[in-house]
Length: 224
Image (cartoon, rainbow, N blue to C red):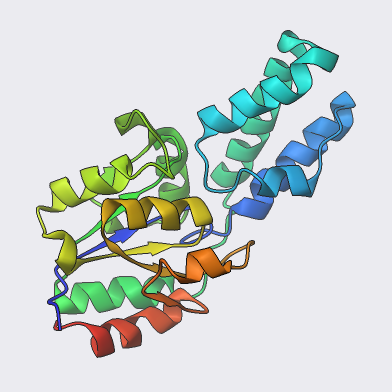
């Protein structure tokens, strides 16, 4: 049984119930601007960096609506989402306090590794009074390749200075699972909007209903 010496957290869809807010904000702006957007299109890019999502939107919509209009669409959707976050619209997912308290009690360090931008991360943590809960953060601004590339998790591991076999990642998205697997770090999936596929099931240590279930699983699976 390996000794658990660190935990790496994803953010969107794992700590915060943000994914539907991103979609809702984008859908409202798309409807206002007459752009054919859908939830299916949004779900296709869950877990991907903003930069890659925006590039995909340009590729898809520029030929019909023009680059300038799609740039305005992207900016307006982003601004609307950030305003919602600043107002505290993003609720914490079940079990956030449970897992943070457990790690504190066990004196196990943690780090946040999110494909989001640092400004958005800071906004969400501040609105939930969790800024001090994550003294170490790796984000989109710190890497050249977003998930499913393993770079962000490899950087998180280097910052924690913990062997990969003594780490566990908590993730909700397929891209995050692929990144964790490529990094050679065990990962627990707590699904959000998208159910795990057979391929995903083969790459995870476990699939748990919520963060509330993580402490008991870690106690049973690791030496603490």
